[in-house]
Length: 237
Ligand code: ADP
Ligand code: UDP
Image 1 (tube, rainbow, N blue to C red):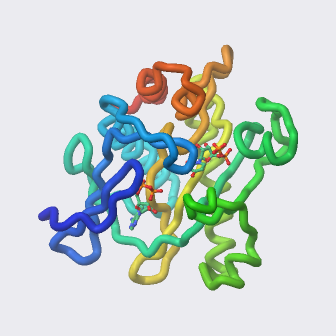
Image 2: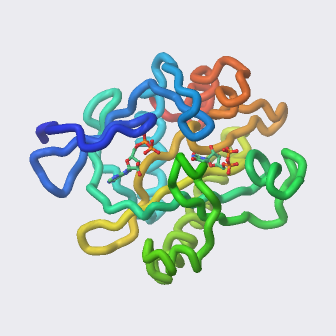
């Protein structure tokens, strides 16, 4: 498949057209952003690491019956994906309290939740991705009730699959962000990426953070953390 013009340059990835109107090429760059793009830094080997990590996870999800946009790896930093019309929301599932839920609800980081939570955030960096609910999605016409229900049930199904996968590797899946889109037939498909850039993973024994919080909190060893997770889950890099 031939790579054509760059259609969109996000904070971490670039989206390219191909000679087939139904497919895009995702290029994973080394750019790493935090705080809605306020801080941007290059981290050596991040693009390659996340591309391989994401591909490995997406294949596991496909095997578990989750529809994803991932088609095939094209290079160390490029992946062929199905073109989707993205819904402008981020779906966040939490198993343990960390990050924004601690600030919003005054709970301690590390609090184990009795059951996973589900939250929608409106994707808008200038507005700092405000939290929204079903009624906002319906009122602004971002999605239908059926699409909302599908995003929720797929997000929880993904939680079952990934919690088990990381648990086997001695890791706690604290929380994660997903993005869904619609394919040409209107099906809700998992898009974007799943990597340590968009989730929290802690070592089960030591609670050492092995995700993007190492970058946000200036803990150092960011990509080393991502690579340790990859090694422990058996993801080839
Ligand atoms: P951001 O836009 O938040 O800065 P990225 O740098 O990761 O994030 O850019 C990737 C962009 O591509 C995101 O806006 C994401 O919603 C979008 N995207 C992900 N998967 C697809 C897809 N299959 N089809 C179309 N757009 C996609
Ligand atoms: N997340 C993300 N992109 C965002 C916001 C959050 O990938 O724009 C991920 C984040 O890495 C974490 C989860 O979603 O794994 C929950 O994030 P939270 O709401 O706690 O926000 P944060 O404090 O991390 O900004």
